[in-house]
Amino acid sequence: MKRIKGVRPVMALLLASQVAACMTWKPIAGDPDYFSREKPAWVRVETTDGRRILIDDPFIASDTLAGVVHEGDQSGLTPGVPIQIALSDVHRIEEHGANAEGTAVAVLAVGVALVLMVQSAMGEGLGR
Image (cartoon, rainbow, N blue to C red):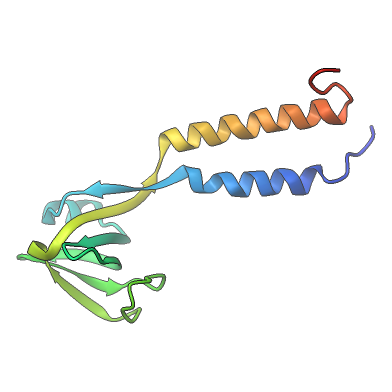
């Protein structure tokens, strides 16, 4: 069987580009029970003044969201430093999670690309 050069790198690049479609930010309630039950590793918080802050090990104590500034945070805060935000200053809390629709589209796209690549490599591309 003839080995097709370049197919593996192209497929690897295609698969890697589709991974992002499998994850998304999902809004969650600022509910202390949610945090104690689900124990999210990190969350994204949008404050009422528009800042977005990534927080590790988040929890709610009384009327405050607390945790540690995430290593990948780009808000200008120092990563690894404890942070507390009054819930009255929080516009939205989001958790990074699976995106079923994005995953389905990614799987379909990879499947179609694979079929087209195999057809092309075998000389049976569209229109031939």
